[in-house]
Image 1 (tube, one colour):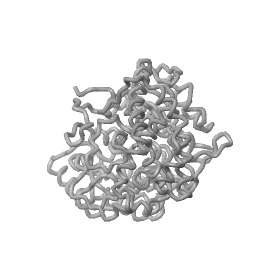
Image 2 (cartoon, chains in turn cyan, orange; image 1 turned 90 degrees about the vertical axis):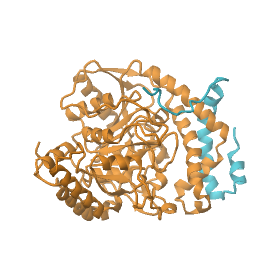
Image 3 (cartoon, chains in turn cyan, yellow; image 1 turned 30 degrees about the vertical axis):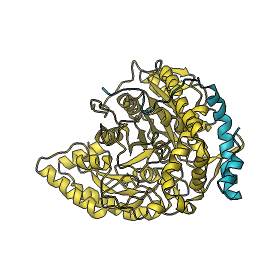
Image 4 (cartoon, helix red, strand yellow; image 1 turned 180 degrees about the vertical axis):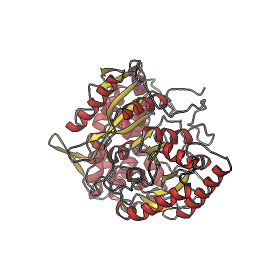
Amino acid sequence: MTDYRKLAESAGLDAQLEDRVVPQLERLEAVFRPLATSLAFAAEPDIRFVAAEDAE
Amino acid sequence: MTIAQAGRALRERRISSVELTRYLLDQIGRLNPEINAFLTVTGDLALDQARRADAGLRAGADCGPLHGIPIALKDVFCTRGIRTTAGAVQLSENVPDYDAAVTERLSAAGSVMLGKTGMHEFAYGITSNNPHYGAVRNPWNPACIPGGSSGGSGAAVASGLAFAALGTDTGGSIRVPASFCGTVGVKPTFGLVSRFGTLPLGFTLDHVGPLARTVRDAALVLDAISGYDPRDPATRRRRKEALCPPPSVSLSELCIGLPANYFFDRARKAVKEAVVRAASLAESLGARVTTVTVPDMEGLTAVHRLILLPEASAVIGKFHQRRGELGADVRALYEQGRLVSAVDYIDAQRLRTEFRRQFARLFESIDVLLTPATLFSAPRIGQDTVDVDGVPEDVRLMTTASVRAINVLGYPALSMPCGLDPGGMPLGLQAIARPFDERLLLRVAAALEDAGISAIGRAPLCAPTPFSAQN
């Protein structure tokens, strides 16, 4: 898992800001990491970011 | 009064656009000090546009359904010569020298711009409790938030200060204020409406759409602003089709999905009941209603956040030296985005493709999915947490739990009123359809509206109807 506390310290965040930032990222990572790990080796993003249909 | 009713009155010379505009400007003067829906009122411009609209009609130059209709714009759309702040103090002196694509299109459609509506700072939040320009208040209860980030647009429409307003939706910012303020709000398919000249938040998640009092009003505005624009590479070259549903619509041969998982897990009882009632109504109108299992919404919501955090930090990063002036909530999000790795961002984009496949499969068996738009009615201003099964949860994350993930897919979705909670605050129904199937989405919504699902009355802080509404 990512050490967000360390990253926040390196970024120079003060303790109060760190406490607002780090727990949110940690909770997010707990959901996201297993999904990211499950990605197929060759899975590609759709760099057009459009929704399914091509131009007519 | 609807846009169509006002349009008929204008064409039959029962009222002029100038009279309509002057009336609304007076009402804005009366109600805006309490609601704070408008950040900038463009009275002189509006009256000038209204005079031209009246002259056009007299000369037989009719620009269509929005001709002479007063509309408001969220303060995120560039307006030539008029301050455009995105609710940010860093942009308090920003006066663009060009119009956004949607500003141009509304102008070409003959509409009248009343002003720019208030919003959450940088469109990055759902309260519209702006630390620099003041809190926007909910016309149903001024102690409550109107939702956000297009809170001023929702409040302006709900309080009868504009026939419609434009908003942007990056993770629910049209549908949340629509739900909390008891209006219709449409987030169209990604690529249907040009974002050119719209101050960005998340490049791959931002959508532009209307908020209005009725489904057909929203459809008329969406019709006017949609279409290909070479200045926005995401817009599609599609044949333009009229989106406004006919006066009488049927739901026969349609299949409506009702989710078995996720959406109702943490919804308030009144919300669950209202959405189920809407599905039953759809069934009584001829639709087949089926229960469906939706893909991992928790995961899709996480993907949204992993995409938006760094995209928004890239945008706001332009003002990195002034980050100390950000409100506490936006500052925390800005710093979060700077700590997300590039690898995680790219993996989120890869997962986005996978989720799109899963939703495409789901929509092979249904035409429209009905869900709550928000899991509860509008929280109070300053409320940071909301109680969910006895656990205090972050109000921002809970408010967007039903809507945020849809932006990752780019699917069209709307929120429409579907009842009031025991405290008398509006509840929103979300309907979601396949990409570029706005016609069907609006048809389903119009059928439900015609059947009375949205008959919630008027907000207590609402301007009286300008003149006797006659069909």
